[in-house]
Image (cartoon, rainbow, N blue to C red; front, side, top):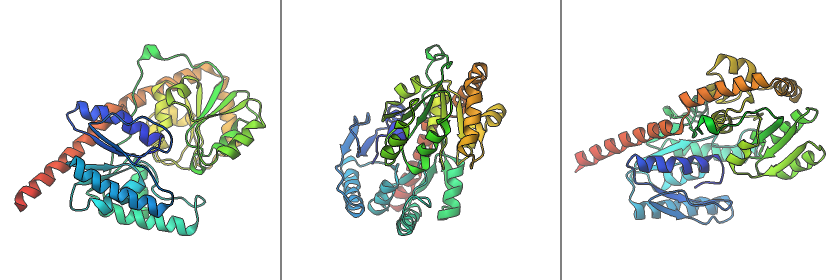
Length: 355
């Protein structure tokens, strides 16, 4: 079950790699905005009713029917709602891995106390029933261990495609971008404050629950534009510097995608940011601000970036090297495939012993 965002992009990119490696892939999916079905051997799109309980029940039923129709050797869930459905529908039937791409329950300030407690208890229950839990960053794994008691979480970083070097353009302009969901954790409101007094062309690529308030704030500033949801390649093509001012991150996919294109990034040191920018000494020193960095600190660093084209070129090149070494998509997807294959083999052995 997916929305058209980072998880959808990962699945759309990963599915062809898995198929090329010899896997037969089935996808049960639901898109909240129009999107093409991921390239798969079997695909079913479900319609979502309104209301959390109705969605959970419908998804549980859809997962059970999909297991009957597709008969998978292994199931992989990608969102908290899917984790709950798989825990209810697949236990004892199909080996199941929960792949956690972000904090699976609301953080303080992102929902009522009751809603946070309910989601936290639900995913804690689900992950205890999973055959394996995979996380996209070490930081996220530590969160699940400390908050949910997940004893063993295997880290498989997200990956991205690297465009060829000769397809990259010099990032010499002054277009500063926010790229992500317009939600509390991604902090697009802070982005508006960061660029308020900076000489730049600021563009906000994304959609989400804060779209109206962020759009109203952007409309007051002639150099800031809310672009709405935009294909990632188009957004990255227009960007000279990416600002990642999130309040929390699991693994910053936008940062990795920017690095693949040689785009320098300014980011707060939250969640898995350090696992990307901390991999290189100069990137860590130049591109990472404290987790509580205020807009003024971002603005000062950003203004210096914009005035130093050579620094931006060098940092963009260094980030691309980090991404090529650690976050290339085929290698990360195949690492996940090796884990799934191992679990399938163990399941087959256990089944044979029982027979």
